[in-house]
Length: 190
Image 1 (cartoon, rainbow, N blue to C red):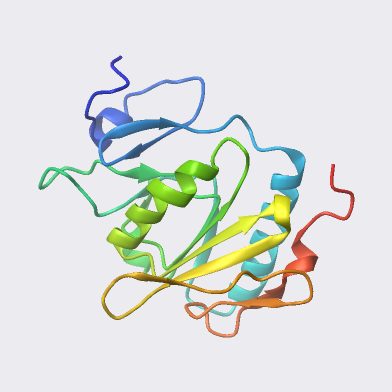
Image 2: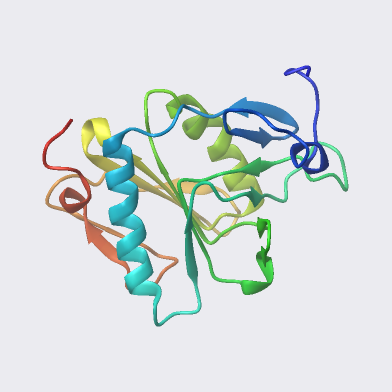
């Protein structure tokens, strides 16, 4: 397979790679190896908090691996962007299908790791913004911090200040949801 070629969701469905891949604007991006223990602990805490909070709301939380087909394309009519966010929240049930989410989630959370920071901060940021993901959170375990990008009225992301220990990260999209930053990071820094 030509890793520099252009591919669509139809191609993606036929692949049998040993490692997970994402498709961003027709280009294949290999994902980092399985997340480390700290990444998993952070993800589990966030998913648990979101799931508990959303029990009485119409939204649902999902975690990787979970295919999200985004409405961005270099070629009209072709689905060429399929990502697997660490965590996403979908409030419009019509976007949910057996294969995952077809459309922009309301909230996407990515947890940075050494192998994926460049992709999350550049390529995914661009497709999340372009596709209309209303809120995009980056969680940075190395610095025990997080930042929230929210879409403005023009469809461009506006970044928050960095949230650190002693502060709460509030969601604008999931009304009333917030959490203490220090409570999501493992105590033992392994």
